[in-house]
Structure formats: structure tokens, C-alpha cells
Length: 319
Image 1 (cartoon, rainbow, N blue to C red):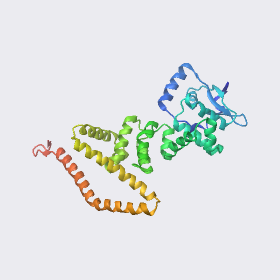
Image 2: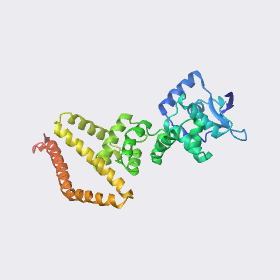
Image 3: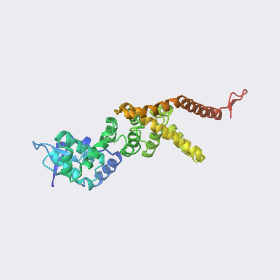
Image 4: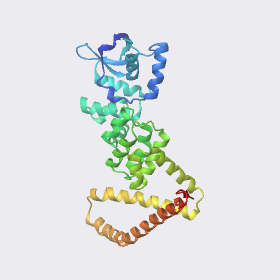
């Protein structure tokens, strides 16, 4: 590759949205560049008019240089055009850390902007078509809002690829519910572990818990869930099994709600399915009564525990 220097004003940033932002990594890099200068060239290609250098890799370095008022920076020309630059970036992604979602964005851009098929891309990279399709599938499973928050650094990619991905795959959460959760916690500086804990409570708990998270009551929500985990440690085996049954029931009810309206099947499926559905409906009223009684009993216990008796002489509560 041809290494040279360029004025920072001549760099084009139209591919910036293909790369993930990481605020911590960028802060560390800023400190390093301020002390040692730019140690690694920025990679890209010149546009057809040779007026601008279109950046492909090195956006963190670029932003750090802008903040430090470094105007002349080293570059390397990696290809003669965008399509070949993308292919080369994907080829070296094993040695230069390119996240799987970033790979997916480059592949999608090759398809949409450069009209390459999945087979063409796979052949260019010496990869299988399954390698290409797996990455595109991961990207398609993100809602547009979640994709935006991940790539702008407002929602941790690890949470998106972890608990949210599991909720989406198992149909526990709809796209709308995922968007509401992401909107509620994005950019709040929550640790990755706390976001996972909140997500589990948000998608497996009830409306009241959801409202607490939406209203930003993270401290209350986290304490509630952590207290619940501590309480489970002292449960009997039967009680633990029942909690697991409730979790499984919630999972499969959510799946049926999501899947059945989308189903287009044959008469044999409907004949058997309708019998099972009638059996569920037959138990549903009783099941709702039992669940409501269970919830009410829990609420009554909480009230009794928090009740205080008023001291008539002082007007204060006596526990």
C-alpha cells in the first residue's frame, strides 16, 4: 500500500456509519495520540476526481486528530475504488479487529451500492455463502433504532448481541418492545452487566417493572432484581421448579402471540392446532384467576410488611 500524508480537510467521511463507535477506546486513543502522535496511517482510497481521500478505516484516529488540531495526517491508499477497498477491508478483518456487525455493514453496502450478490462477495473473500448470509441475518435482526444506537456508541454492542438477541430469537420481545427498552437505557452510562439485568427483568417481568425502567428508575429496578436473586437462593426445589415453569410459560406464550398470526399452513395443522388451542382456552380463565390471586397475595404481603401503626401522641409511625 502507498503511504503518504494529506491535509485533514481533504478526507471524506461518507463511510463513517459502517464502523462502530467506542467512546472509551476513543478516549484512550486520544491520550495516546496527544502524547506520541499518529502511529498508524488511516486507510482508504481516492475518489474519481482525486480531490478527496475517502476514509475506510481510521475514523477514531481522524476524530482524535480533529480534537487535537492535527491537520496533516498519514494515509495509505488501499485500493483504486470503493468496492475493492471494502473487499480488502473484509479480507484483512481477521488481523485488524472488525466486529461481525461491521463486516455485515460492509457486505450490505457491497450488495446495495455495488450490486454484488452474496455469491460474488463470498468468492471475492474466499469465504462460503453461509459466512456472508450469517452476517447479513444478524444485521437484519436488529431494529433500525437499535442499529443506530449501537453504531453511534449509545448502546453496548455486547448487550445487543447477548440478551436482546436471545429475546428476539425466542420471540419473547417484539421490535416495538426492544425499541422502547433501547430508548430507555441508551446513553445513560449504565454498565453492560446492569443493562443485561434490566433487560431480563424488562422482557420477563410485568407492566409495572417496564414502567419503572421507561421512567429511568434504574436504581430501584436493579435493586428489585438483585433482591429477587438473593431470595431465590433460599427457596425449596419445588419453588425453584415453579419459578422455572412460570418463566417457560411466559416464553412460549410470547412465542405463540408472535408466531400464530403470521402462520400460513395446511388444514392438517389447523385441525390439530385448533384442538390444542381450545384446550388452552378451556384452562385460560382459571389460569388467569390463579395468577391474579398469586399476584394479589404477594402485594398483600408487601403491604403488611410495610405497614406502620400511628402513635397518636406523636403522629409518627411505629413499625
